[in-house]
Figure (cartoon, rainbow, N blue to C red):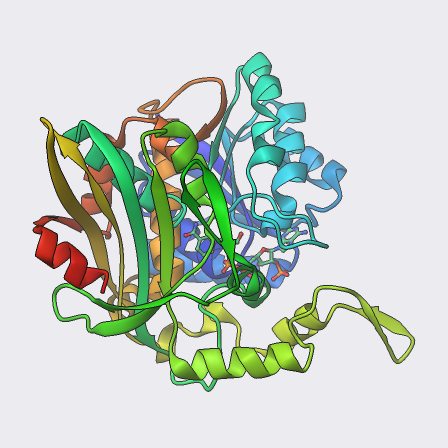
Length: 407
Ligand code: NDP
């Protein structure tokens, strides 16, 4: 039986989610897209109609005022709210879902606006309330977090008795032709990249200066060789909690020299700051002003070429023997644009968002409370990745290949 969803956020990711949900009418019977700027919703709805023949409804919503979302949910009575607005809206949207008895899903953990802290404790604190209400909240159903959690859980289920180390490697081998642009929301992206690096080792997070650890990584299937930099990423927190055998967890992302040069200059001149300053008598946040002058990631699709390659390299034991397994997806920017009018970073996030929603609506994943992706059975999700546009590969690495990969 088809169900109804409300998608909040009409950005790069929201557009992919709307298109992909519309392609599955048997699951997503009614789709409503709400965001602060209704014209963005209407543009997406027009593209969805042209590409899929389906009409979706839209409305303007400022989710920062909880009563607005409550009114919308009371009016539409959806089965699920899909939050692809910004991490700042996570808690207010969870509150609205609790008040209206609606399941909840997001792609990024809550962040307070005044501090770049990516931690789950604010959302995990809702466990009891969701459990008592008989509602489900699924956290982090994008690619990373999201698919990377599922890759790890799937490798644990099918390839290991125990995983001791993971390296999550996110390569964007794409080129958008701009001097400087971020491939998802610039404010969130820059907060994440400039935050102190943390990785899990010896039972705690170890902190090092941002972007201070660098390796060279050769991607499979000719995607290329890239400099990858260690940084903090939120899925490490939930993975080490739910898979406690993991003794070391690291996250790596590729950055080009031009991106890093621009970022350094912007930091040096204070443009990445999140403390308010007064300009012409008005309070502004430098990073928010910077976002306003940077290219909109949602508009980069047409000019972006190349491929992304995101995966997890796990090391552990099977039948007492040490082994290393790499599971990854390669995604082509131009193919994504041809299918839904978006670049691969929005696409690799939006497809798993749709699949996570599908898991809940089809009751393949169910249970009251607040859940991270690795807590559910990874198999149906892995099948759907192959079916709906993000096919994956798995390879066993020899000790030599493993050390070459992470050289
Ligand atoms: P965008 O900035 O392109 O889109 C965000 C959208 O949210 C905008 O349309 C914006 O509306 C809307 N929005 C912001 N504030 C509010 C509000 N108060 N009420 C209603 N709508 C609001 O971001 P992306 O699409 O690139 O990213 C969306 C989310 O996906 C982010 O949380 C990001 O962190 C996450 N993400 C997750 C990834 C993963 O792999 N897990 C990877 C990439 C992104 P308006 O335009 O009117 O301001």
